[in-house]
Image: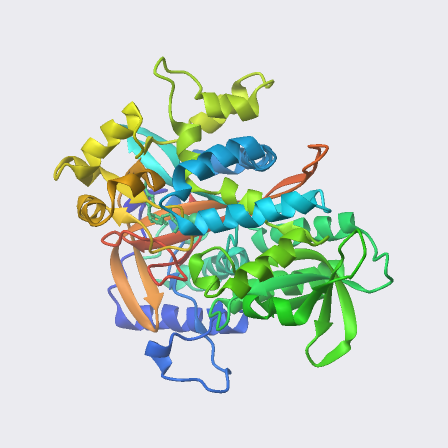
Length: 514
Ligand code: ADP
Ligand code: MG
Ligand code: MG
């Protein structure tokens, strides 16, 4: 329990009727406002007609979050956007890192091969769009609280749609339900709940790319394609962005399963601009030109079960559509990149890799970014890598770390004592494809989570994500659009190592600034 404005927070919910009343208010508001997911089969059995939706797991109360940390994370986002745009523009830098991990990582090697194939014939679309999310936890060092970056996502950064709704849910409860609680106390009317425009912000980024693409030279209507996974349960999160694009910008959106790229799209034959054409399944003579392709799939090996899936990715990459992201931008999100940016010089000061991308600035930007880094070590054969290998294989030393492969989407990391066990199961020549990161240990908090209709009360850990949208030109290096685009707060039980909501570990939350 944290004490804010003189009261204990969140309030003790000792009264069963109060717990039920609050849970019911959340259940109804969530379905009425699309804070929902398709049901997990284990919860509702089967849904052959695809008509069921259930509440996204969510906290009953917004979790307290230090205001200075929140402000810092938001204010640094455009610097992060620019940093990752610059990294995406630096093929030589990425090539070096890909070579370091590709030996033990076939997926990264395959992505690089697609990039090389397209480079061989020449890219036709210089514009790239990033819908990014930088994730943090609060690190407590004595009295001082400092955000530390968990990771930077450059592909399929999700939950912007549901996150905006979660902020609205907690704002609604603060006006209606919290003041009615017996233990309401002074916080009931005094919560500071920041506005969250994540759905609008991400849609604005997509709309900026759509506008920059311009009209079709072939006189087709233009559209945005959302590449999605078959059987996606987190579909309403994506739909919120789609509806925003439609209602605020008048842009048509089509959802295309990754597995249907080759049957539904084609590259305009014989034309140098390689327009990506999409034909409606219901009426193949209705053809749209894809201005922007937004990937909510394709970030992990599971989406590439056969060689044809790699051909599909190649078709997107070589096309004239603006990719969100391109392969280079996807690779910029490798944990290896984050490690290299954070690895200090033996003499201290700003790491060389960071200076490579924020050189020319007065140094304030570099130091601002540096403050958010925690210690991350290579696992390669360099002296620093050898030292990390020693820590990672030590039965006591390993307990301070998480070891990460170059993967996205949750469920891929090795924590504490699982690290030496995993290392022993793979050839030492492949250890370099991992990075070793110090565990961030945020201050303890309590909350109540509503998940699958059950309330879970106890200690929680929060992870803040800040969205950023960035559009740039790979050739001229010009940055055309660069904005901070709202936030996400995800909360998990403090006994759980992973925090992904879609992967079933965490839940949606919002910030109550303290
Ligand atoms: P992914 O790309 O799969 O989401 P992450 O790097 O975000 O991988 O790791 C998944 C989860 O593991 C995070 O959401 C967080 O809960 C936990 N985690 C990752 N790195 C750390 C860290 N350094 N300290 C504490 N927890 C971490
Ligand atoms: Mg993550
Ligand atoms: Mg990630």
